[in-house]
Length: 436
Image 1 (cartoon, one colour):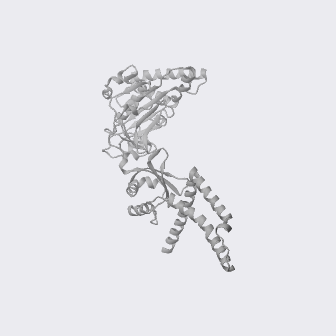
Image 2 (cartoon, rainbow, N blue to C red):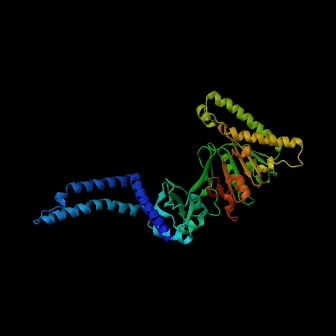
Image 3 (cartoon, one colour):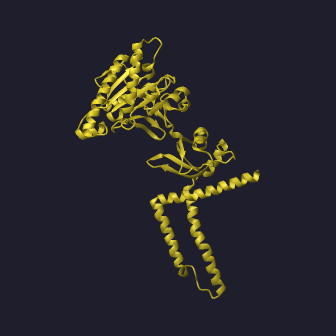
């Protein structure tokens, strides 16, 4: 058994050396300066070999010395020409702290079944983000999902935050994106107006370890924000709506808990209409559908794909419409005490929201909904499937599953108000914004 493990270890390290060479050669080839220097090096080596008679070989009176000298030069020259670049490859590519990383992985127990830790292939900075260091590892059979599950151990070993781990160019490589331990997310991130993105309809949420977190509603049109009480969900919800208002959108805001959270003047202006009754909300949804019908005819007439193209083509100024609801479960709940008419109103509202979710993007109509209740029936599947921007704050596994389709948001510490997670696993601190 011991011999078998030794053989496996030797095979693994042989593959590691081969991958090191491949990584080094690829790194050199992808770097213009390094590529030129390497080519020049081999050109010079070829010139030296061509002129070896004049440079290396001398005439000896004793013929055996001539033969021996030529043999030694030939024996040493080409291996030296090849070995020296390979040595440089290892020195340039392999992280200087590779041995320390390997030892640290072993100490924290991040190893495969045979006790082998991942082996570092190279370390480099992400282009445009010098604060992000990417480690490329030979995985030794540890897939990215295990890196995520053992994130705390890896962070301890690297003395850095592990932002994400993704598959490399092949199944033997994992790319670990890290930032220095001193660059963690703050507990409070105050909003500054300079953070407002001036591009078409990009909404800024906050900051992750990799930089600002933005979403483009003109591309991914509908949003679901959720979280438990005290998670900061309402603050993020308001921040998103305020940015929409700043971008000249018309906001129809439903709050069926009495409207107390939206008492500031900004939510009761000509640009934003606050609605607290289902009948009024249904009437406004029907107005939105009439707007969609009118815009359908406009786009057909001018042969435009969406409202942005139409505005550019004809010089129009048709605003985007935001249909928002704080705690959509309250809007769509069907209590035992509801009469037939009330249930019919809820059914019609639900169907209109589903329709807007399906066709709204091209016409500049967007849904921004929030959810707090951990009930699998709180939001219908036909509606949720069109809410592709999913953001979850601190919550239990049930609510996390409803919002993100996984339970990952339940891992957010309880004390982290304003800490959120996107559907792709990105964790960020939301900007703290006040509406008064």
